[in-house]
Length: 264
Image 1 (cartoon, rainbow, N blue to C red):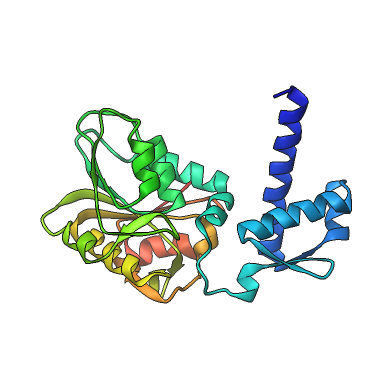
Image 2: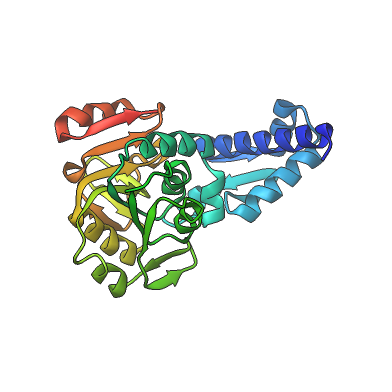
C-alpha cells in the first residue's frame, strides 16, 4: 500500500471516529454541516454515514443521521459497533488494567471490547492464569505461550462471541481467583453495574463471588446508564479503571463507596 493510500485510510478512520463522537453527543448530525466541518464533499460524508449505519452506530434520516441510542436506548449494540466506539480510551484502560496483574496471579477476564484490550496487553509471564468465557480474549491470549488459560464453556452467544449458561456458572464453583476484570454496559451510582443480557448478569455475579478483587473497566460513556439486569452494587467493587473524561461524581464515589478510581 502506498503512503498516500495509508494516509487517506487513516484520515477516513479518524473522521468517522469523530463523526461517531458527534452523533453520540448531539443525537443527530447533518450532511451539509459535516461536509463544511471536515472540508470534504457531501458524497464522502454520505459514505461515512452509510458505513456507520452498517455498524449500527447511526440510523439514516433526511439530510443526515440519528444516533441509534436515541431510537432504541435499551438495545445492546453489536460487537462490531462496540469495537469502533471509544477505541483509544479502551486501549488505554486495557493497558493500565493489564499492568495490575502480577506474576502468580489468577484472574478472570470478562467478555467485552474493553476487557479484550486487557488480554492484548497482558504480559506473557509464567505463573499467570486467566479464566475467561470470551472467544476474543481466548484468541488474544492463545499467542502468549507462558500464560495458562482456562476457558469457560457453555452456549455461544454470537451477539458478543462469549459463552453463557448453567454450565458456565457451575464451572466456577470450585475456583478462587485473585482478580476479576469486569466489563460494563451500565454504571450508575444508585443502580450499580448492569448489563443487557440476563445470562451474562448471572455469570458475572458468580465471577465476582469467586474473586478476591473486583475491578470494573469501562470508558466514561457508560456512566449514568442503566440496563435491565443488575450484576453487583458499586459497594462490591475493589477498583474502577476508566478514562480521564469521567464525571466528577465518579471521583467522589471513590470515598463514598470505598473503591479506588484510576483515571487513564
